[in-house]
Image 1 (tube, one colour):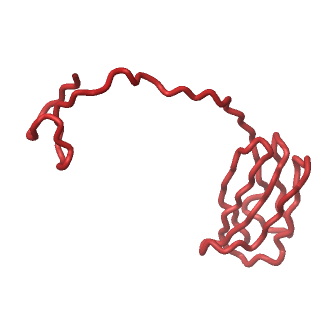
Image 2: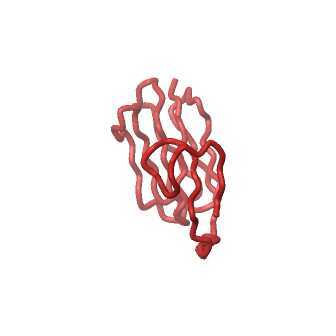
Image 3: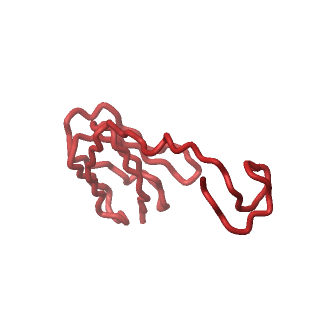
Length: 118
């Protein structure tokens, strides 16, 4: 049984704001997350970009990279990159602005960061 203060509602009432008593199912005690967590690191530089190229380095192989403007329009996309852990992206045709760079690695990790083109 869970007890809370300032109870203005009857037991098991969930349709209004407020704290109340409820009978909780205690058979559920934890979440089993049997899938191992695999992390990878990713760095993007230079950022902000003042030249023609931005470099991505990852601790695991890069599967895909997309760059989208702030309207959500994809302005650059590369997929099927093999086993490359480093990638140089030409950005000379992109206007000076802020973009969202999304990179997915082979282990399934998705990295998202802002990219500033000056």
